[in-house]
Length: 271
Image (cartoon, rainbow, N blue to C red; front, side, top):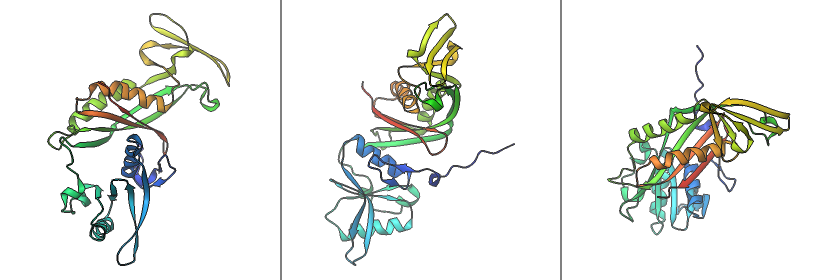
């Protein structure tokens, strides 16, 4: 029996829309949140401490500084910046293993409004699906082929009692939605030539010549656009958003197509 390889955070490359190479998924999520909110930011902002030492803080915004705490050194840097720049708002974010060591809770989470805005993300082995698709506009992908994709979901909204949504409840909802996409054939509906009670006939003239395929309706998923991973992210959001409780205001979906590549779409929920 062959075992699946372990994919580490360091195996992925995280690049924001400005072209910055970020170190972790947490940093990427922050950068994408800033973009979503139209909040200008500077990554790897340089500061000179009172002792003359130059340090780098992860994000500088108009409202303050944010440091992602990944290790013990980040904790010491954060504390030194707080001490040397008391006039600045400095926020720490990261794994509880490290952030819990910082006692100034009000500096980690700001209580500027009630209820408090927050986000969670979920990634699980059960959030994966196998599928086939055709991209007639892309020569290499204009023939029938398949992928196994994994999904990560982030939820943003108003927290109640310091909780956005119970992880167990969120996981159940996400898994049900992802299962809708498992073992399906995805194709742009504009390539639909004809149909009967049980089958679609898909037809197009692509880079590899004329293509015509009869497929069962119950295993075919017709899309409004091309069957790209970006469009699949949007399609998952369309199904997932109505299932979210009213305090969840935005949903983001990452889909990895193989290793080190994929798509992320985030969308407000309109009610």
